[in-house]
Length: 187
Image 1: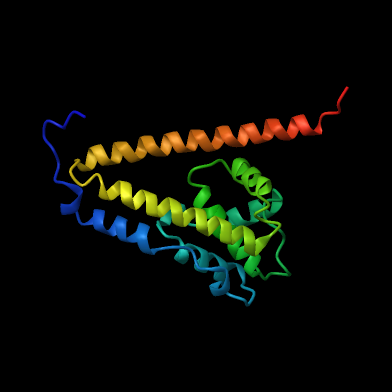
Image 2: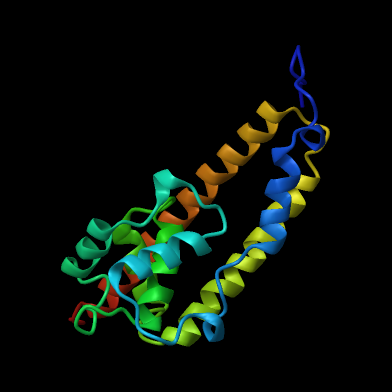
């Protein structure tokens, strides 16, 4: 691999690189048993979900209008009165992470294919297991790029993100095609 003409300092000398690795190794959404078992009002729900995201950033915060849109689109069930349950918290915790990489319709389809919403605790646990594997793998890749410049490392992760997003979308499309074939009557 060709090196930059003017290499930047290695990521290990950049304060954010160890923080990224630490986040990848240590931060996860709460386990099912640690999610609030008391119903929350909208403001409490937003505050909780936004605080518990592994990579929190204000521009990616969950908002009241997003939650209302998810409900209108049938992605999220209606609250009990004005109160949101543990199931809502789990579903929104999953959606808020995936909305950064998949169109909402694809996220909804993924959740339907895996029955993540139907088996709330089991679905949430599966999501957390896959997130854990992915974060550990990403931390390992980040550790192995210590000799590269920040720009080269950012490019590698951007391209990895592109490739994995395309694979996810392709697999969802294949699942859609398989579902359509099963639904067609045989002649």
